[in-house]
Image (tube, rainbow, N blue to C red):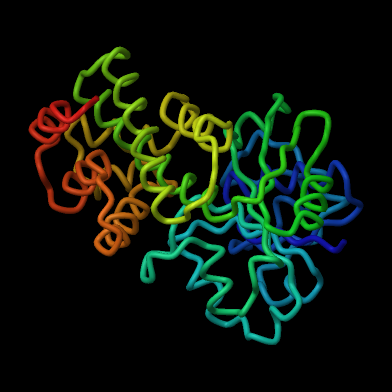
Length: 328
């Protein structure tokens, strides 16, 4: 397998580290010349996950996405969803022919409100049988320090899921297989929204007791949405659904929780984005889920609350007071 990683952020850096455990060469597309030069000379990404040590002898970098794609047959897409369309605007249909896609982006493409696998399916005619998704409770910061992590490899193509599992399994990464590609992706989108809600609640002064109730209701809401958008048997308590929700809602590493906390403390959306200096996928995700749900009509009180706060400038205190009356 010739493997390429597309994206230069913290999670992309962590995935490069994992892949270097099992492979002699990894192709890596990064936007910034500064990252390319630093990884090549020092073995560190100077902008994201700076503590992560990378085996630069195994990594071939380029700031030209077409060069990297042409060198690989399996592409790990780890580009923030807000930048996917822009990143692929000069990538031709023929360039993506016969490629296998592994999505590791937990967000929706903003203009179309599509999950990433659906973006590749429609733009490049790449069927789900040639796609996989990796997800689960996993912060890049813990991968960097080689703390034990469990990831789920989801694909309707079991052979591809096994390939991906083999590529990323190592002494600090265990893998689980699934065939629920859409459910896993939508769960990854929703958990960021619910982490925003947890952060807002914490910023408003609510305690652990309340946030536990919030996340319990978020799990119910997630199941309701997944059962509507992709009807199949799934156990919402599995780590790729509930586990990922819990770690994103409670962890100190969660940028979505941090972003929400700033909103709860009175920051404007713009000022919170400036201070974060990193993408909080939940900001774009809540807009995508809100727009998609106009067609689906699923009852999503937590999503609706976060949307009104972020996009309609509703008062967080009032919105959470109203939301609390709907908890079960």
